[in-house]
Length: 310
Length: 184
Image 1 (cartoon, rainbow over the protein chains, first blue to last red):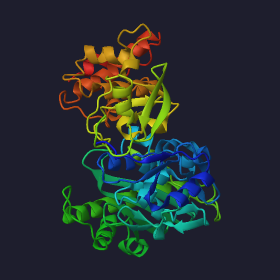
Image 2: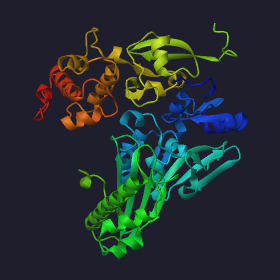
Image 3: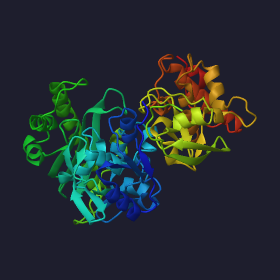
Image 4: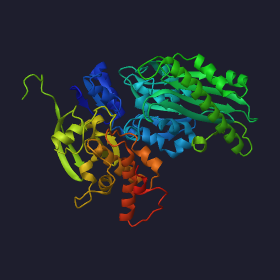
């Protein structure tokens, strides 16, 4: 249970880091928070020849609210994102989902961008990124590119990032619409453990209060995060969220493992989809009513995760 | 030393301020902070349980934040301030408030997991000096204990908060069910 030997490199700038990545080749691995990588080293599931430690790249330690949403730098710890007040106001779903990411002690070190690049199909923030139409910015010596969330997750533990690319930030887009509500729900054996099934939901209402979009995203329900558009099902079901949950679960193909059977996971998807969509719809309705004069587009309101949470 | 280690590993000189004392060590890059504290610096209070971040026994404070020392490379936290269970005492070296609370409330039996609980709780109570029983339970959610059944550890969190309030001369707002009465 000790890491195998490797050479250690500590760049001081992003430019230096991508130069190292290029020169050291595919046997080099980036170390950010290390809360997934170091266990893999300890168990010798990973044996990189070189580690490039980006923990001194202060230029990447930020959480920024931008017009489109919240941009998280590669060195922002989960706890930084979770406790960022401005980010919480812009996208309440971030902090709500982050509270299910492992335990606070792990969130003090682990990074949000790192967990996205790790591409664990049980990682909450992979699904949140997909649900919020996010994107990841990758930098290499060849230049910079941006990959949309829908194309970023390729297979379990495999992302679209090439071996010479450093993920520098992730953008989570603020849901648009007259009034939106979001929710995150999951079932795990113990709070903080990997979820057997986790669901994020975004519900958007028009100014009259009618549903305009219902979207969900899932973890632990397939090899990569699964995103569903349930708008038609939700409109057709006329407020029967359970039926929406059943329609969602019919589109999912979870696998069986030692923690849960596929059938149980699908049952969780029915129940959690129904609950998450109902709560998101309630929050959207509350946001719609709180809007002073039901705003005319643009400045959409997002239902806060605070009240309905108990 | 050992003949079959292959080429000599590169080492790195690091300095850490551990419990207020500047310490230096020469470590290979793969040295975990938990092993650095125990083997290189001789501070065996930090216990090593699962070595993959699940049990919480090795939790120490890095610049005041609780982190798993088995999931940190010592070289990566070069220059940091570390607090181990040895640093959770009062300034005169006697047991600190969290440690006293564990003793009073029987918050430990075999004691293996205790260092991780003490550091986690000490940091938690700085942020939330007046937790409810539910918050106390949540605060220790990332640490495993195979002996106590946790009830006495929850009581210890609440008792430690009480001791710290008493000692700071701030009576606080004693929420219903606080302190020793909470023990199961």
